[in-house]
Length: 449
Image (tube, rainbow, N blue to C red):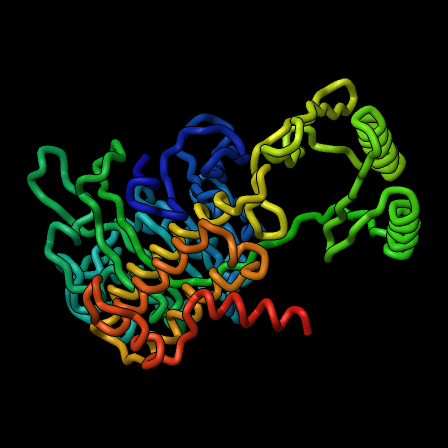
């Protein structure tokens, strides 16, 4: 569709040959106005992003249709008018009808835009601030009528103000292409002429007409009109808080619950494997019942459990069910920003953060030639140090953490422009940055205090 191809939001169409008035909605909404017979007819096609800004549809007859858009700083009436088949008297009556519509909906703070097949030639000579010097052809009688109409209503003929090659100016060609003329014009209120950024024809557009598609680019800010608003039920926060406290007390008394921020963890222990399995399923049943009483549901497809084990202990097969469905058991998961596996080796967590640290090294290498060393330190602390700092007191002394230390040495060498085999001891001192093992020790002692 030409509207999509040329990124058009509003399109005026003549000769739609539809009876009556109405609108057709899809990705593009068509507002149309026809007569009692399927003859003539006009329409305005609007992209779905514009529809919610339409506040009024103005239907006059099968020759005039208008829409009023809510915009900033003023509203915009857009009118589609074909006049080509009328005699002079008919044209004058059509102008009178247009002025009546403008009198009612286009006066005052509005930016009137009129799209017309005027069958007029305004010429290539400028006239006051109405017609520019970049028109096409020599002015005719109908052209003077259009200029008079424009002067009375404070609008300008936009496609005479932009210097274009002739192939971007003509809007109609005679059968056999023996002559080409500029007969179609887009009028815009003089006060808002600076909002018009460009006007030209698109001779290659496939519109099945002897007229060329005339396109204007206008800078406007539209307002969305809220047609209706569904009332949303308000949460009873006091009731929710009371329920939360009751559940918290129950969990703390019976289930050894641990609360952190908005996460709740339940610690379950058992003397024997059989008792542990029973307590586990009993606890999960109580939690499920609380969900049910509070009109909540458990998303079984996103619910997992992890079973920790070690080589020195016998492996215990555990199954948890909810509504006769098994909860999926996983070997690793993300909990409060830390990636935990079933052996608590922290290898999974370090595997996850190493690509982020590598990206930070690449970014450091890319910007180093263009910024100061002080800025490099800012980048280091924001993109590298912040990652290794999170949860370091838990995983900073694990065996896989040596890989993080090697990555830290790599970014330090990049910052100092050193070779990959150079010692980093003096580099850390020069930058006044703590090595990874020292960071771990520092925060471990800090957490004790």
